[in-house]
View 1 (cartoon, helix red, strand yellow):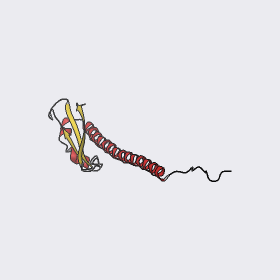
View 2: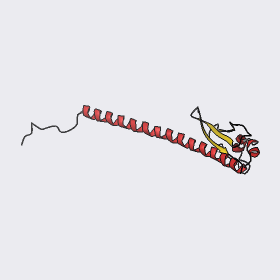
View 3: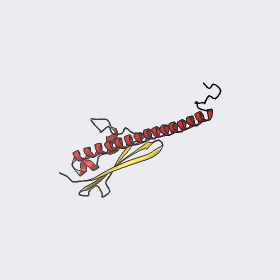
View 4: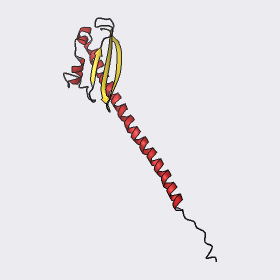
Length: 136
């Protein structure tokens, strides 16, 4: 039995500090990735809502069928008005919906571009959808 020559099997303070530093770096990386995922989720949600709002206006335009009924409507006001008189589409921060007719209101087929703009974290964002429409 040897009493005086006992081998140390524990961790030193330096080894514990290095292990803690590695753990902290890993946690900081995971938290940064988690926060980044939240930001991407918000962007994707806003883009989805904006696209749905543009499609809502496009479907109403399609239902109107005649160029006169389409071009005489104030689509921004229609989108902001709650149903049944409007679409109730404006739900994003500072959302505006504009409908333009690049080839003119008398063109056949009628070219329609719907632009949805909104504010996201202080930045102006927008998305567009376009179509050609003929009378049925």
